[in-house]
Length: 416
Image 1 (cartoon, rainbow, N blue to C red):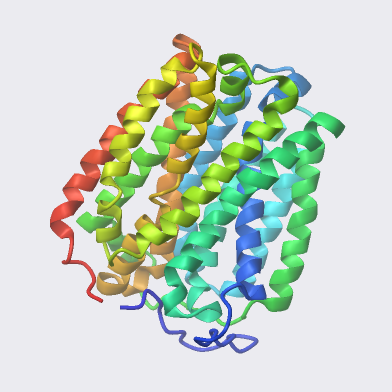
Image 2 (spheres, rainbow, N blue to C red):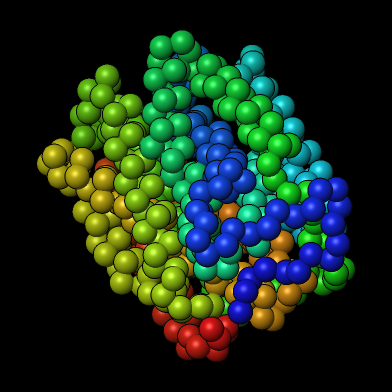
């Protein structure tokens, strides 16, 4: 069953026809949507790479700046489903452009923030629109590609965030070290203007307006499969973000990476994350509905064991460096599988909630980011960086539990 919803009419330009079997996947519209995820990811994650620079520049502690990661996620998570449900009631193209404009204004504020309070306001503004922008990008799938490329499209849109880790965050870190941290946000602003120009030029202007009421869309949350899928991603993301929020201090203070090589360390970690997202797309092809996510269970078990051993990083720095790369390879393996669960369950049982379903992975992951980074902050304050990994392992074990509870639903959600 396709996860798409037929358009109920065109507004503006006619929808672009999906590529035929012999045509390529990386068309300009698809690349534009990946680039959109890239700038969203760079804006969200750049704080991790330039955390010490912001702290020094604004005269606050690194833990205070680290709290921006939690704050971003705490705003992002509840607003994303609300924004996605509301956006389903309005023309997609106009909504997409409006939200990109708000995103741009927020990043301009970051670049010129005179103090921490203004930076907080700017990050909240960005968080208010980022999740809905990801959800809207997902809804373009039936208009810019064919069904056989569905999981590939999902994986690559999510991979825009990983590419931001590989290229964007390290480049932003280098820019911050060379020209000052504000220029990292200026770089995001320049790229955002380019993406807006591409959206105006190449994306279809048809809409997939919701045919059900606003509140009725939220019946999706009463589906047990959706509930377990959300919890699974929350725990999986929290497992990684307990330590990822403090990745730069871990590399600097625990593994003793020289200051001049921190950017290279972020590049290597980001490459591992990119592999994670792309390989996650292959895992998502193993079935429909809840089935792909249940295959992640042994991966969570291995992740828990590896996270627990992160406490050895300061004792054996070489092991710690290799371990961080491996943990990066685990970071996003559940993303495409969980998105398949949300979209397939919605297509089968809640077809009027497709926009909302498209937002659930971003919502869930950012709840996990908020919880994980908040716990990481408390652990770092109370026990130190050494204990971040073992606490992350506890969240990975909770993810094992949710995938176990999903097992009985295999084969009952969506048939091929």
